[in-house]
Length: 293
Image (tube, rainbow, N blue to C red; front, top):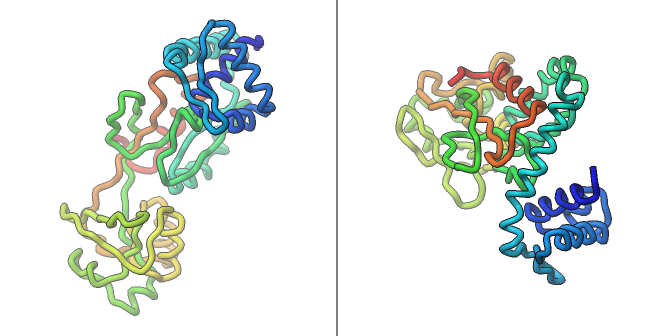
């Protein structure tokens, strides 16, 4: 890649993550090198692109004007490389995808098949239960719970993810099993939430505020707390099906209706989905663990 193209790529990342040190670490370059690349872009276009202070890097209106052109240029270059390079016949390179914990663990167990078919493919998995910024984190794809209302994202429906109320048999032996959703008010409910926001479960069409002595913003922590007998939890069926089959957890109120989660794979609207990411998207659709939408 020419010096100017590398400098333009650096400019784009500085717009997305306005920090010399963060971009330098990401691009494996020194702070001075990143600053020199920005100087080159400013000199080439004859514009001041950032106001620089000792603590902040602030894009100027000219940077905002240049950014879509720079992204389109890099996207076109990537597309040409894929059309004329080795990726034309065999997708290669790194796909960065953001996933929730439950779905991430599910798909990881099945990635061997994909990697065997496409040995030049590399998967970079960013697993968290909270929504990541796709541009800042350079994600090619991310999984989201729908509906998707943003014009900045292109959404591909994957399917619906069933959920179950579960508890450890020892907890139910101590406290008894609820016979109706109203009985949950008298139980320790393990909330998948954070801070002061009340946890709400919609059961049989009625929303109820639930709570207990333990809550977490991570589904894996909720899962483990349930296995330890701390209370009743609402978790994806894919996460607890094995526990129920093995007797480690028991389904609670199994006849009640709990709406599934509609899951979408999304990618930034401003960026063409490269073939390597399209291969992964097709894999996500083919192996989705719930009914297709």
